[in-house]
Length: 114
Length: 112
Image 1: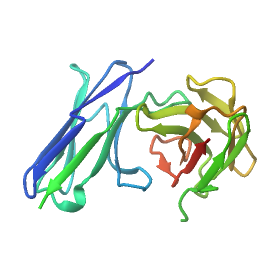
Image 2: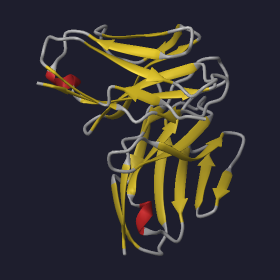
Image 3: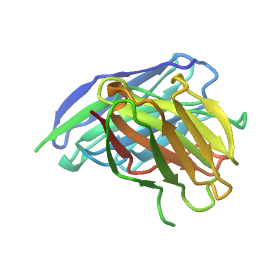
Image 4: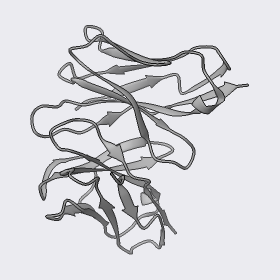
């Protein structure tokens, strides 16, 4: 089955700096890669996702890049703010076959220092 | 639209008991997935239901089971509870033909 590794497990940045979180996946057939943000005591919330036919996607301060050949994808947050502090999870899935499941990385705890 | 809801939000049980958790998906969503979240293992997939049929199952023992009703609401059941079952149980819904999953707030299960 699919295996997703996520690095780093913790990340501290100064407010205004950029943060990068990287994930690798094992199943070359996976074609959907979402990122979730989970604040303490709250539900995971989708912040951005990318499909395998796209190499990069941006949404304001957040961007995701995908390298299918190397089987890795990354989350980039620019101009970080204290409210970006949370745990971020990457995930991978194979879709289109009428059935799918998300396989998650172990998470990255991001701390933005004011 | 109202988001995914889960009941109860907190539950305390003792070893050997059984428990039933409930999930109501976003209106119109036909797929419900269940995940177990623990500090050590992260988010692990339990199973997925679509139109009352289990389409996919994760690597969990048979003590973990679920079902989905005709209105897409889903329940999961854990029998013969063990201490290691203490976790946050999250359900997520999606339309069923797209991949975006939206999570509920979770049920925090503590097994004593």
